[in-house]
Structure formats: structure tokens, C-alpha cells
Length: 114
Length: 113
Image (cartoon, rainbow over all chains, first blue to last red; front, side):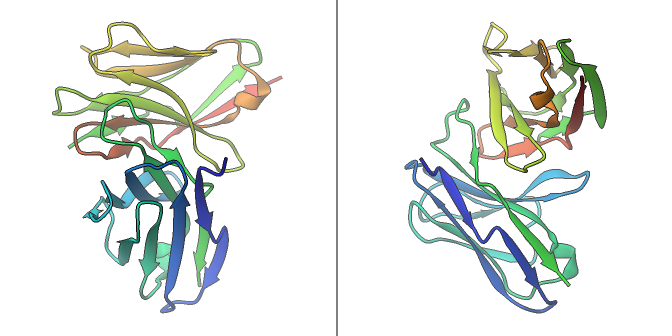
């Protein structure tokens, strides 16, 4: 019962390098999300996809792009990594728009940019 | 816009005692939901409990209950009979009609033996 799977779990990049964080869910959920977590800041939404074929900006989208590849997969791309993007990144999914549906999270990707 | 405020950066509780973690919210939505998540030191986010804005009864899930006071815009999490494994960061979140959740900054709970 995998749930939400994120790869990689850890990554170190140099400033200016690009990288794609992968996320896949096997729960047949419609909505998917990318968050970043920084100390003392809680979780902040980067981008989300309410359903297959749609993506929307969240609170902190600058420097990131996303692709909803299919219903299962939602990737996050850093085109030119900056030290300010050092963070823990979480992917989440949710069955649908009903208020009572919780988001289910992956285990996170710890990303360091030197 | 939605906002969550968790005013307690850290809390301490003795094992087997109850503890209340505070959460206040602000929203312009008429219908909304409140969620609590637990993040242990291992890092994963674990969903604990949900309360809908129109639910008349406070939500309960095992040792977790949500003290929902709509007029005060508060949704406090109560953990009864604390266990050492309850030591973790706890996040309150609010969701409305737009698919998104807004999280608070969290409260770090430490359970002492």
C-alpha cells in the first residue's frame, strides 16, 4: 500500500543546476499538491493540480514549474536552482473537492542547494 | 484568503496527562473544514482528525478530539492520556471551496516521562 511516493528522498544541487522532483500516487486521487517546508514557516503551497489536465499556482510558485503527467503523477521542476530553494518538499494528493477529504502526503524530499 | 494561527511554538506535557494545542483561523468561506496533522521527527505528515464547519458535534478519533468553537474561530486539538510517541510537531490546517489547504506554523509537543 504505497500511497504517495516521492523520489528522490535526498538531493544536493549546485546553484544554477536544474532538477525534477517526482511524485506518484496509487490511490486514484484527483487532486495533487506540492509544498515546501522551511523551519518556522509551516507548509507553503507551491503549485497544485485540482484534476488531471489542470495546474494552478499556490502561495510560493516563483522559480518552479509543474507537470501533471497523468492522473497518478505530478512533477515539480526547478529550472535554475537557488540557495533559497533549499527546503523539504512534500507532495500530497486528495481524492476530490469535498471538504472532508484530507490530503495524503509523501515522505518528502530533502533538497540542499549549495 | 484563509489564515491559521498557532500561538504555541512549543508545549510540554507529562505522560498520561491531557494536552490542548491551540488553533485559531480566519476565512471568508461559509463552508470550510479544519484538519490536524502530526509530523514526527521522522518527517512524514500524518492526518489525525477533521472537523467540518457545519458539524454540530466535535470530532473525535481515538485519543484525539477537536474542540471546535465556531464563534471564536478556534479549533483546538485535545490529546488525552499523552504517550511518549505523541512527541511531534502538530499542524492545524483549513480548507475551503478551492481545493487548497492553508497550514499554520505548527506546535512542537514534547511528552515527558
